[in-house]
Image (tube, rainbow, N blue to C red; front, side, top):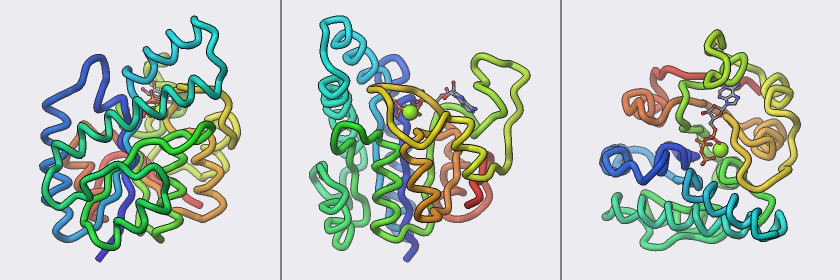
Length: 228
Ligand SMILES: Nc1ncnc2c1ncn2[C@@H]1O[C@H](COP(=O)(O)OP(=O)(O)OP(=O)(O)O)[C@@H](O)[C@H]1O
Ligand SMILES: [Mg+2]
């Protein structure tokens, strides 16, 4: 049975408010695919995390405290996704990747959020992918993949079907975590782990459920393949 780790962007779960329809549809898809493929979901913070982080920053919190706030937001989002998935999933939110690995031995789906300050959910997903020996790491976000530039700022940006991990690392500005709540197509910390463990990584728009399905099943999808 294939094992797949999905970094489920908080940008999909909570773009402004919770996208109830997306959460329900994605959960139905995960439940169905999990009959043939083991799925580990790492849910991001989205607007929930960003709004709390910006308030905390205004109130003088340290980057570490802000990251704690962000982690709690990701776990709240993860809990909601878990409720939507329901049957077949481990009925808890692991706080470490090791615990998630253990629960994955028994359950078809494991849902988690962040783990500790300095580790984005993209990075947690990469860590989990290396620990479980995942066949694929999928980064589901709110744009169709990696573009030459931020497509929300540069309408002329082009979608890349392939990019090497070295180029992607340059594009996202390094391989280390820098600040709480930073946005970007893939977190720098995750790039470091993808390179180190040679993880097969695909980036796509999670709202395109056909692509999400294709990527999880190892079939066709629209998005970017990272070469390592
Ligand atoms: N070269 C690029 N290619 C694609 N997207 C980019 C690029 N540079 C910046 N971005 C931005 O990255 C955003 C996605 O990252 P963001 O962190 O906001 O979402 P997420 O990772 O899905 O959600 P979360 O971080 O809450 O889990 C896109 O909406 C886009 O504006
Ligand atoms: Mg992000």
